[in-house]
Length: 142
Image (cartoon, rainbow, N blue to C red):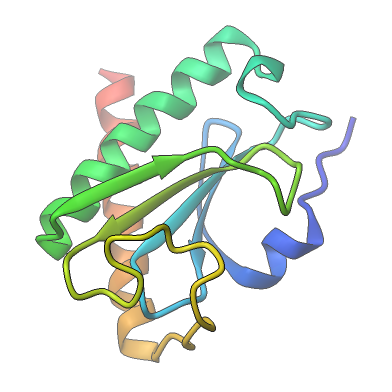
């Protein structure tokens, strides 16, 4: 069965990397360093819809990315959540948060309008993501 990403997720994010059947996507919002992981599993809307090995893979990848983003941004907190109220396709959010960000300390969802990424910010965030995914892949292969 062919995997098709929800058009809403595709519209608001940039495919940064593929890792073991998971799309790693950068959200198009300069206010937050925000990544979503989308397992390429047709019909999955909840954690329990993923096979055990895929669920473990997504969790391990999210931990690696969260750590890399925290180091890169010096943020106060990494928020990781699988909510899916607006887009039922399973996806996991990883968001860098700090006092003074536009929504702090409230959740980011529904707060203001996204701010476009500049080329410089986009390139830097993509490099952080791709370096973290590369390190994750190397660690898995050894």
